[in-house]
Length: 540
Figure 1 (cartoon, helix red, strand yellow):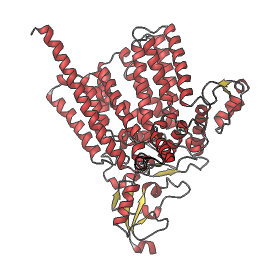
Figure 2: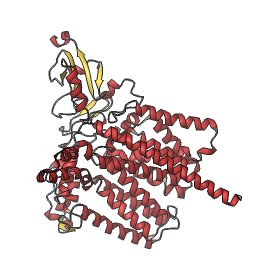
Figure 3: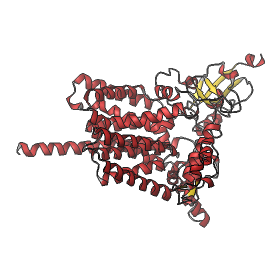
Figure 4: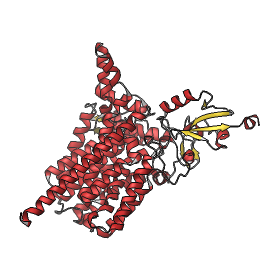
């Protein structure tokens, strides 16, 4: 065989091996994610997400309950088993099948599949930016990313949000690299799709606009150069897809309603409505979309849909007129809840980008990703009060994994010592995450030396989101002397969930200071702390 034929055959074989490895990694991820999904009890937000999804399937997208504020049509996927069960039950057929598909384990299946799709997208991002070795490494990192696993397998929209952001940025980059009509359509559609994953995805629009303008003016963000005609065509296509996807997903519910006819709750939207120049404008988006933005602003300002905000031992009451969030909340959450090995790999990836990227390649690759991640973190840190968990920045964590893949670029040419270091970091990541498995929601990295004291760092959905009900019930059956969540000082063995302990929820009750004086002797699922309270202290 000639050299001319040998090289293509070797390359083809390498691609086949990479593809096989990817299939094995994602298949392994599917098994692990499914086990995590079925091991958790119903969490606090899931009934509302599935409830709104059922409303969508019944063609009633109006947000008649305040808890539907941030819910989106994507939840209809999770509600499909429930709606099918309702139909079977109404017809009195297949009772066993009806009982099976009504379980919470099945409604999480679409979310789990979306997480596997996110894994593939992360692979594609890293593969196109840094090569096949980097793509596979990033895929492995997703498999062992505790926060992506934890919240990507629930019947909520946080995992879908990460998928929507990564997907829309992927196809937008394709358009920047090659500004064709086909790529404009793909980018416009995926950008619109992101809007139905989470209302907050609207933040992507200014990011896209900024890079389009930058590409048109600087000639350094796209190749070939972006023209003003390209800009106009893209904007037109994106707007058409935006309005079409939103109206279809919200069942064409009252589009082109005049702004004066809306019933707003938040001061911001009320002020906009009162502006004479805007009152008679007919809004082309469906009524529930703008209604959702308004309700989110209202609930975020009043705290009506979430508990008190907690960080590093300090609890802030949402009912306090002077209440404000923690500017460092998400920085602290990332520092303690993202695996240390993954953070190191991300920094190594940034070093590779700094050393190897031209400005043009950076702007249409890592620059786009970092801008999207940075904008989300900054907005939620400085302008959002509903700081209830790292789950709100899942797209940032997915982007972190993509850039961490840069550390593995040209892996086969590395010196042996460098390969060993990178391999050990991946091993550390796997072991760290596995040490909590399958309890992914309360994961904390090794900076938290005593896992029983995680509540001193973070609470709410970072630690205790209702996922422990099965575990607690089993524990109480085997330990009948244990008292669960006593309000008054109680001697003996008491079990207290983290949110009640530190005063996150209920928000009208103070922390249990009498219990906080003691060191927990054990935990149940990391989110419930077991105390041995001496009788003498209660008597005092």
